[in-house]
Image (tube, rainbow, N blue to C red; front, side, top):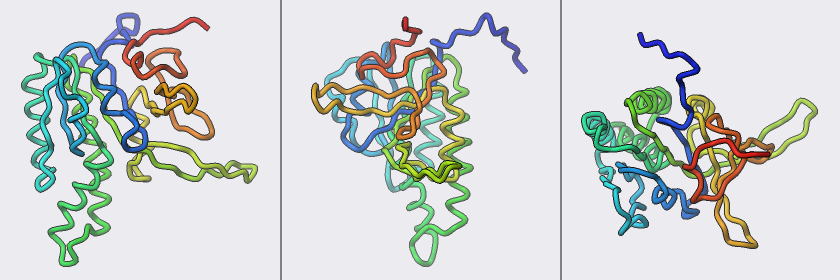
Length: 227
């Protein structure tokens, strides 16, 4: 067991992030702003948007065998972690679908059964936990965007945006990742930016610094800002 003194901890080192938005909004493109060498597992085939950018190594998940591919990727990432500063899994929403489809092939109906959903919940928590424990690495996960209905004690109902991950596990996943950001586009200026503070309409959190929002290209410039 390793003990660390709090005064020796630095929030800007070896951070973990979960970034989400609707498909095509620019989550994958955000990777271009990372510093250092980056290793990407492309789960949904959208990594071509990074064509031409330096210091990025990409491997594409085999949709026919996503389970073993994820195991192999983890083994490679852990073994070669000293060669990279960042690891990206893009994206969890599609990986979730591929995992369930893969196990559905084993059933008579060709569809995943109830037991598979519970097993995936445990698998996803375990998977993120072990990736987060790779030393000296920044971890970035992406997901598509979903909405859920929230009912307050006074009866007020509103819809909240959040990552498209199974309802029974999404809160747990967001709880073990220090920064959860939603990518949005300003309709007037066209600029893209991340919401980093929770509101009634958006789930977000930022335990890395005091920013409540930032431009897409400034996301990885971690540090407190003045009022």
